[in-house]
Image (cartoon, rainbow, N blue to C red; front, top):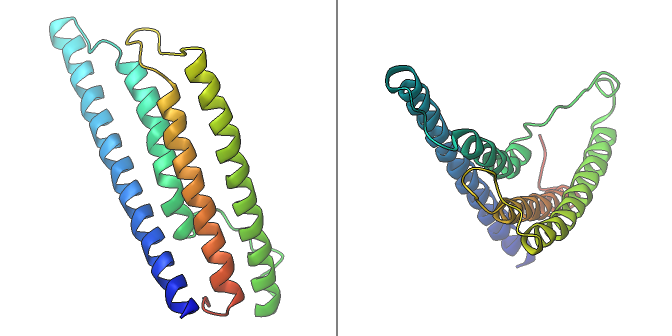
Amino acid sequence: MTILMAQVVSRALRRLSQIFALAGGLIMLTLAIITVASILGRTFFGHSIEGNYELTEVGLAIAVFLFLPECYLRRGHVIVDLFTSGCRPATIRLLDNVGHFLFTFATAVFAYRMTLSGIESKDYYEQTMILALPIWWVYVVGVISFSLCALCGVTQLLSRDSGEYDE
C-alpha cells in the first residue's frame, strides 16, 4: 500500500514538473516573439516595445525557475564521474543519495529564503522601472518551483532507499 502511494505521488510530481517545464517553454517562446517584434519595430518604425528588456528579465527568471524541477528529475545537472567511474554500484548509490539529500536540503533552504525575500519585496513595493511590474510575484514562482524541487528530491531519496530506482 505504501509503495503504491509513493508511486502515485512520484508520478504526480513528474507530471507537475513537466507542466512547469512546458509553461517555462511557452514563456521563452513568448519572450522570443516579443524580442523579434521589438527589433523589427525599432528597425522599420523607429519604435520598440516599451519595457521589452524588463519583460525579458522577469520572463527569463520565471522560465528558469519553472525548468528546475524537470531538469532535476531528468538528471540534467552536471555529474563529474572522474573519481567514481571505478566505484562499486553500492558506493555510487550512496553518493547519489548524499547528492539527493544535499540537493533537497539546498532547494528547501532556497524556497524558505525566497519566501522571506518575496515578502520583503512586496512590503517595499519593489517594481520594475518602466512598466512598474511588481517583483514579488517572481519570488512566488521561485518558491513554488524550489518547493517542487525539494519534494522531488524527497521522492528520489525514498525511492532510492527502497531499491525501486536502479539505473
